[in-house]
Amino acid sequence: MKMHSRRTFLRGVGVTMALPWLESLPAWGDDAPAAASNQPPVRLAVLFSGNGFHSREWWAKGEGKNMELGQVLAPLMPHREKLLFIRGLYNAEALKGNIHSSQTGNLLSGAPLASGGEIKSGTSFDQLMAQHTGHLTKVPSLVLGCEKSNPSVHKNYSMLYSSHISWTSPTTPTPLELYPALAFDRLFKDEVQKGDKSVLDAVLADATDVRRGISFSDQRKLDEYLDSVREVERRLEQAGQRGEFQGWRPSLDKPNINRPADGIPQDIAEHMRLMADIMVLGFQTDTTRVCTLKLNNDHSSLRFPNLGVDYMIHHLLSHSDSADWLKVNRFFLEQLAYIATKLDAIQEGERTALDNSMILYCSSMLTGNHEANQLPVITIGGGGGKLKGGRALDYMDKPNRKMCSLFLSLLHKADIHLDRFGDSTEPLAEV
Image (cartoon, helix red, strand yellow):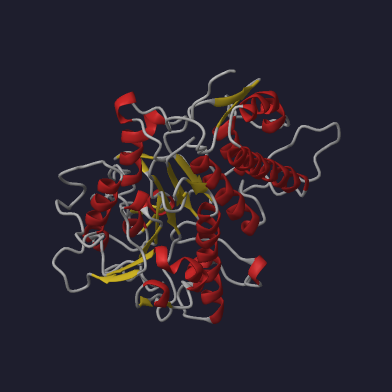
């Protein structure tokens, strides 16, 4: 019988698929033999939405199953025991310069920003983690977006700062993948390009071979994983048929729409949901351990006809605490809840994929009036058993309330031990 390990890939012509965590197979990942174990790795996800939240409904109090959440966070109630609410953190450099751009471009780095339309920030902590773990996975880092970048200048600062939270280097914002189809291809296909060939059809023979050598429970887990990949493929195909994607699909007939000018799927709800599914698949297969999902820009121009809120763009809507603003806020948090639910349904030994992940959700300001002296920050997930949820921490009156201190703490939980990051030399002891 052919022997397999967890680093076995299902292969077909032009296609490579990593396996999910299976108890019957030996070591996880490509770690050196001395470090190899049956423990799944810790993953990091960063989710961002711009322009802050409803000023009276972003709050949490209490502990564990008795934790209470404001209306913005209410979609996370089923996961509150794995939720860490952190009040009072801020980024000192974001208080300099202008509003929007200079509050966003250094959110994950704490670095000073160049003005005058120049581009200079700092390497973000998600990309720092990718530099340490990327050699272990097919895709070092997956950076996804649901709104295109804005190249203009606002109040003497490049709007690229408002469009990117992930930075590969101080002068290089990490490119956003806006196409769900291309993000899917990057995980599973050897060449990233649109194509009609099913990933699962390409690897079916290899999957059948692997299935023979694993336990019954792992067979069921493998089948569930393959079904989830097939479901994403099906939805990508249907979305393309509805004309939601930029560009022309190969066909004998002429395309049914012209090429959309903005290059973004028209159905924002389906766009976000597909990106969420692709993130989960990336973690489930250990194809990537770092994913950043920018749901929209700061100073965003997204509209939300799916919510019945189509009269005003996101940025302008953020300037009032209206019922529609709250509805949009909850829509964003529903995406996080969806990701958490899917990860929590994936069993990896004694823990779930959510228990083995750290998901950071943040924005560039607390409210739409540009308040950045404290930022909205939550984490969800267990960080491989190192991150305790069901808590609300308040740093507002504490001496160390730097965002970069949180980043140091999260990096430490991924066994990346640095003396400093950004403007911090001290992790948050309570995290």
